[in-house]
Amino acid sequence: MRTVGSLPEVWLTLAAAAAFGLAFAVDLLDAWRSGAAAAMEAAEGPGATRAAGWLRGMSVASAMTGLALLTTGIVLRWIGIGHPPIFGSWENAMAASWFLVVGVLVASAVWREWRFVGLGLYPGAVLTIVWGLRFNTNRIDLTISERSLWVDLHVLVAWSAYVVLAMMLCAALLSIARSSEKKRGRSLRLLRALPDAGWTDDLVAASTGWSFVGFTGVIVSGAWYSYLLFGETWRWDTVEVLALVVWLVLGLALHLRLFYGWRGARLAAVLSFGYVGVLAVYWVLALVPYASYHFFELPF
Image (tube, rainbow, N blue to C red; front, top):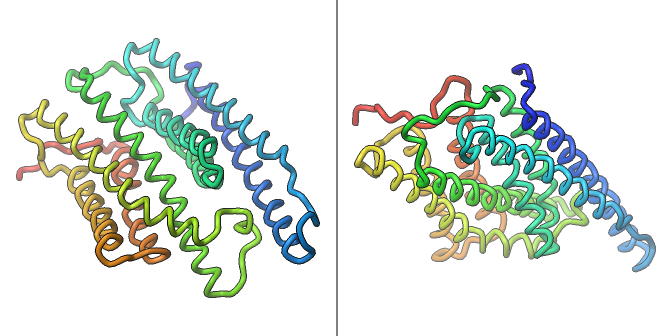
């Protein structure tokens, strides 16, 4: 791991990661205690026990504290470099973490059932920040191709789609876990307080369309930016080819849902496969040391 620099936004982001880690730990404890409460109520009747409601408030407070620290770091970075901090691996780690946590807080405030996604997205934010430390955290001037509002729009669409896809992955994995519980005839204590099988199956079914539309927006905005740079909307570079594969997988899931009525764990498995490809598009080709975001010079 790289030595952490002295820039204030780096330390603020690390402090935010600690807060997100605390939010995850509290959420995990809340789910465990709530699962125990649900099991006791099933055995002894309603009112037998009650989960500690203050845990939820503590989790939200910790996440909002971390978000405030991270937002401050992003603002300082923005002021220091004169443009949105969305270029380079470290800045993308900051942006991704910000979108993930905002997604958890907004979704859980609007839909109560969405609270469970913090169990997946909070540690995702922490790991993203830690992984970003492997790369240069210094403030670097933009190249000419990066000085465009269109690339800012492309990144905004990409990270917005990313958080939706990450949330849907949590729902898909929960659906698969519920299916496994049904086959075994017993439930896991940690999952007892999370949304039931019917809710997760409905969400996974509905998510196919949102996933496809969101990733389509990523590809279209990227194609337009490529056209502005090179006069071509498609250049067969590594990221674009892998993005096309992911888009086809998500399209296949949508097709299976609409025309063959797929639901539940098998639809969730197809979507999960697509989400693994999403992670590769966003991170594996972008955050591997010495690798470019795009390789534009393939002779095709």
